Length: 296
Image (cartoon, rainbow, N blue to C red; front, side):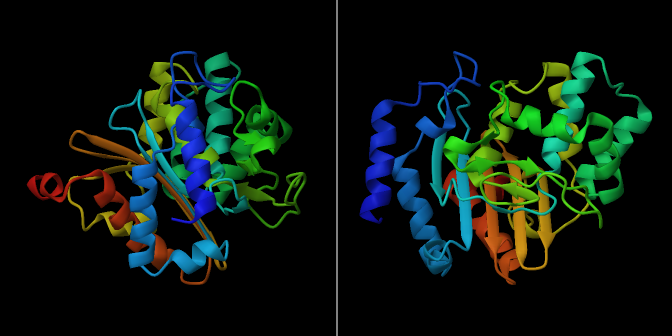
């Protein structure tokens, strides 16, 4: 492990996983304070075995892995965790969040049309539905929610995060992110936080949390993480991915028996989709013992 990485992980671990961000509930730990040196070492070894360590060094690959088998004691490992990259359709989860905040507030109805539109946006990555819902919620409102004290899913002090500053179509960007000038961007740590806040009920109420999770389940596009996890029967995946040109992204909450984890990866390489398919199998095996997967 590089000395700099080790020192950062050590310092974070000394603060303890129990400290919280302003956006988190008082009794829920902050992922950023839950760095696990052992899991970090295993992640870096796995990347080396896959031949992906150079891509990490060259800032062409970012990864976050969070073991949330014990939801109140998550274990985090990451490389290039705060590096913001173009993420294509992955930030559609920000539109999903905006819609469900409005549904919770009563300004948007979760009727059949809305439910079907949101499901298409996530499961088959419909650009038409994403743009329609973005305009329904409000372009600047989505950005305000991402930057709000409540969520802090885009935080300039942490390198940025989730950002939607362009419709999903041919129209020009209306509001690029202030740090990196990206139209659709993400960092792996902030994306992992999205799934952790979802799973701990910190995005919306419990009923709507179940609705959101349902839409993230049963992916309609079988590539990247979904393709890789076919080699691990029993894995249930809730995910959103994205691809455009040489940028490839995937993010998921994965459940397998009693084990549960969050995995996020962003790649800037023409072979990025293949990387992610191979990567998720290795990430899964760091959390889920092979004998458990084989029993399922």
